[in-house]
Length: 506
Ligand code: ME8
Image (cartoon, rainbow, N blue to C red; front, side, top):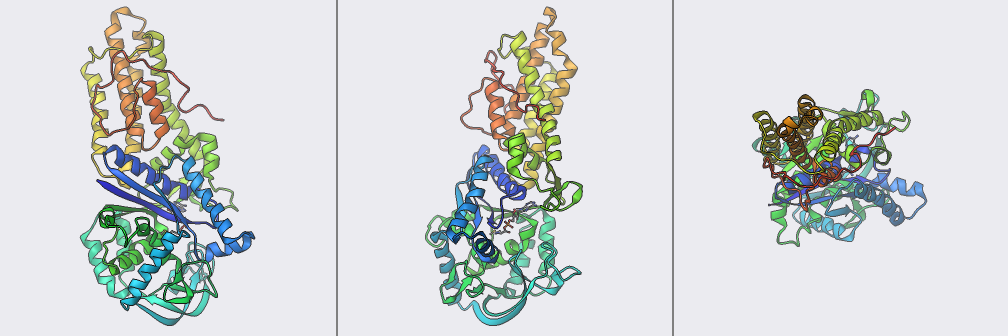
């Protein structure tokens, strides 16, 4: 089956940070997870290159719009490549192919009388690129996310009516409980749908915003950034010109954080419905990374986690693993360089240590060859089949936030169980006693076989480490598949002791 995974497309007014890195890593983890299950996946991520916020940054930069957008977009793309993210398409909304489809969609709904022009007064938050109601603001009259008072704006604009679709959307949420996951976010959307929906302002006069897609029916205006940006999910597959489009869309999955729930779960499904398309199949919503101690990350507090710094210090795989293992499903999650270092140490002490100890033993006492499995006892077999069974069960499920987090957790648990088994069976004592040769072989085989299964399961989260583990066991894998058949490690294969998986860092 072909699956389609998307991330938000990110604004270019700053450098990519840990939050952007997380969602795009999550998409890659889900892609690899599904590929291991035998599915084809098309994965897109990218940058949102229009709107007032980007426009102000261009004006401040002294660069031309094209130069600025290229430079900033490359920062995201290069970081994602460095993080091992295997995207199939990098969205840039400044591409002509995308702009053309935005205009075709606008013309379509305009011709069908779904857009009206009227004058409007409202409070605009540039940070959110959204109009705000007074009830959306905090006690100081500021946007709760950006802590800035929105600007009063009065102008003539084009509007798309959302209210006629409200009841349909409520029914869709109720009839499709796995659409918005976790369910608490579906409830949040249902809460937003309790009140009538205001018309969505879909234009901006060029006198105020010049960075955008021109309205096809009025050259004095550009398209509202959200209307333009959301279309990326279908322009990527050449909507309106691709006979295979509906098949791809039928298995689509959005990954977003809670900050952009409303555009994705209210504006976007209604836009799609107006076009005669179904909403995305699943919308996975995650919480926010916040600084240690529960404070918001901010430059002034000096607690912003820079993904490039973390990669230089701890490597890509430790960052990927930490992010997937530590995002809680229930709320926000804390992150700092210190917490990441602790996560790194846990990995080093668990999987890193297990691999090094057992391989050194094979090198020293078994001439570097995988020993026989002929004398495995019930305890050995149970450890192996339990670990294989747990991974098998996880990989039998479809990808979701819960599945990938459960995967990370089960890898740590399998590592703990194997380390405990190794310590309890004292193979270094058995090695010295020739009468215990059968037992020694069985303990070492069991440990190696558990390590093989752990390496296989680890691939989506830490691909380079997974490859190193398999190679160290003498296995040449061209492709990682979710096949957790136990006792597959071949007797007599030559192991390779390489560098530690997670070397000590200062
Ligand atoms: O909203 N923790 O772009 P954006 C976790 N262009 N994830 C975070 C995060 C944090 N602290 N900060 C950001 C936009 N993210 C629009 C999207 S889509 C059609 C248009 C991630 O640059 C998370 O995925 O503000 C969040 O939803 C997204 O970045 C917002 O990125």
